[in-house]
Length: 314
Image 1 (cartoon, helix red, strand yellow):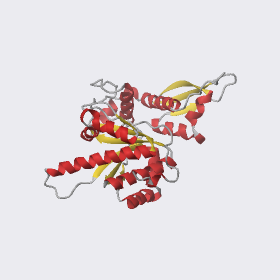
Image 2 (cartoon, one colour):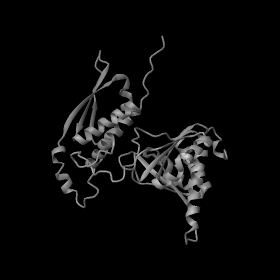
Image 3 (cartoon, one colour):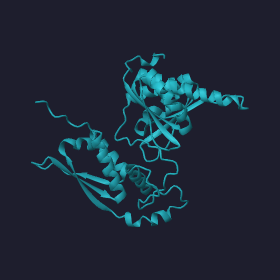
């Protein structure tokens, strides 16, 4: 594995999330898991494959950059092999490129595209790979897919350059990771009932909220859907109590985090001034039940991402 891009101190711990179709994942896992076991052993990277009967699965690679790129190149080689073997009985004359998707927080996509698209153009030109950043976020998440196509070497080089940009521009705010839905997953109605219990409660809730935040995508006119939501559209208020020492996680630098939560949830959020003698602060959330729930979820997610204080040693 060439270490050309590891110069400049990039040999740090990284996580890369790949979004793949079930068939490709099956090939990477191999018979009785032999293929993925070999990748783990030879690369030294942690390779985790999302569970579930889904048409799409997430493969997470984590570890030092050298291990990650070794595992990544083994995955690309496997996909290249699959294309070659499918060509054997095919009448096609030209070999299709290897194509894969990586999933990144939407807040990092601006740095990746660059001003006027200059950064992504530079990556395309220097690596020879085709790179496309999705305009929309993946369902129920704050992540976007980046599709990369080309020769194995150009894709590996392209992902290295993307990793450099991502390390230089860390994600802003809370990232809600994309979780592929099981095949035949339920439609979740405005009231929150679902026809199947195969989705995690957290995802069901988020999906339900997302549906309530935007017009129903399958309906040509959103009137019918909106009509069913009248009962839940009224404005109400909800109060939360947050410890003083954690309030900074919610406010963020110069109020960036709280503004992001307001924007994503559509709720109004007011943080009361500190009360003398109290270790807590009052947070008032106002909006529709859907926006209050989403704001509450995002506030809790900000708190969860904050490392707990370790008790001092005696």
